[in-house]
Amino acid sequence: MITLGLGGALRTLTRFPLPYRALEKEQRILFWFPLVGSLFGLSFVSVSLLPFSPQIRSASIIALSAYLSRGFHLDGLCDFADGLGGGWNKERSLAIMKDSHSGAFALITLFCVLLIQYAALQQLADIPLALMLVPVQGRLNQVIAASLMNYAREGEGTASLLVRAAKPYHLVLPLLQILIVLVLLFIFSNEYALNAVFSFLFALLVCVFLMLVSKKRLGGVTGDVLGAVEVLTETAAMLGFLLPLASGALPR
Image (cartoon, rainbow, N blue to C red; front, side):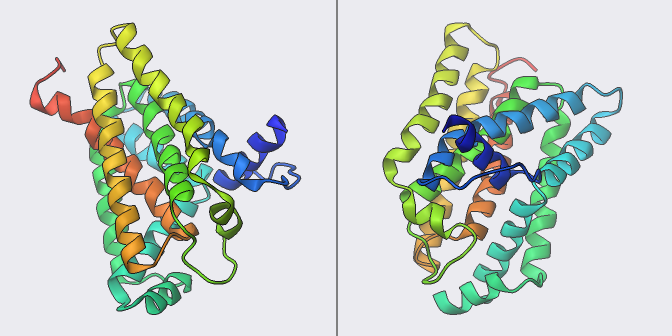
């Protein structure tokens, strides 16, 4: 069952077509989302060790993230931006989000988000802890949104089975994983412990905001919304990690 749950999470969140037999309770894969995020983090740390400039390493990390995830979350962000920007009601917004074409709102949002990530990663590329935590938090916040929100569409969709089956208690263990890591950072007096807390809180704040917007405009979440949550909370986690450094709370 553990292998099936991890395999389902990997198949859902990455490009790798792993052999997978559907679980009787599909929502159990949510437990493994942070772990999958940590695998992304390990790949980012590996790229950060390459003998290139921070600019090249930052661009490579973004490209690798898009490759490993099939660009699925970036596509969700684009659809979410188009839906909110071009739709005047729930039905219209959901119809736009289902359209495979990308509009101006999608392109502007994608450009701005990737630009922020690129700038942030130039400072984070030499901090392995940040590169590990950022993708973990992006996947954790997907779990939070899926567990606390209703599915917005009436019919079936990419994430319909997962979201409809997920309950609030499904976020407890994934959240506990992150909280334990944060506590351990303070126990062992890690120099970036405060940064990690800021990163966690900033990402969580953005997640809550996105859930409120999705509930008001769409009536819940879809697979596209979960993709947008991952990208935007990951970006927020980067900025949150940098905040104590920018304010001088810790030495650079």
